[in-house]
Image 1 (cartoon, helix red, strand yellow):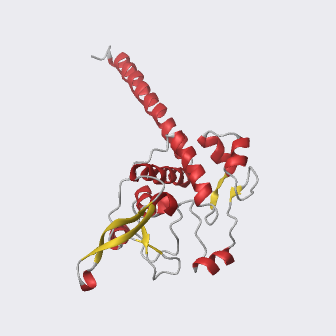
Image 2: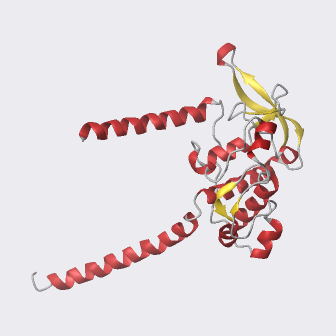
Image 3: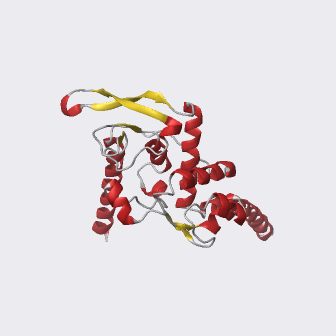
Length: 247
């Protein structure tokens, strides 16, 4: 049993190291996303942005439209009119209009479901936030775009009109060459601060989608802690009462 437990710990440490290597291997340091899933306004903006810019290719196969609407505070009418561009039913899972065959034909592979992207990637929400900010023009790629964090990603920069376009500035020589930073070539419709908020809102929404129960779990946790504090105090008073005559 001891050897088995030791092997499990070693495997966990190796997985952690491998995950860190994946995050760092692309030559980009993860930026702090500072997401807050309790920020309902950010969730609403993120949901609208995702449906406008991402839902055409990516599904949310573990999230129902009705559950999302209730959690982020929008009515059924608002959700169906403004957050349902793929024509699913109100109680249905959020799919995408793109078929797997079309995705493979256009991008070389079917775009993945993004329900758990903010949970399964190394760095969590920070990975998603950094990825969306790391696109640069690369004419050698079929779609004309590449990504500093995830090299050779089969995805265009869908937010380029908001962000603008950038080119990579390299450092090092030979096999050790890396992308030092991205330099803006042409500005987008938003300045850097406004675009950061757009990316943060999308990341906040995807973080919520990865664990919808976290909204209620974290709010409930405060009341659980208060109950435990109150119960501990009552238990202490009861102990004092029982031991009064003994002392």
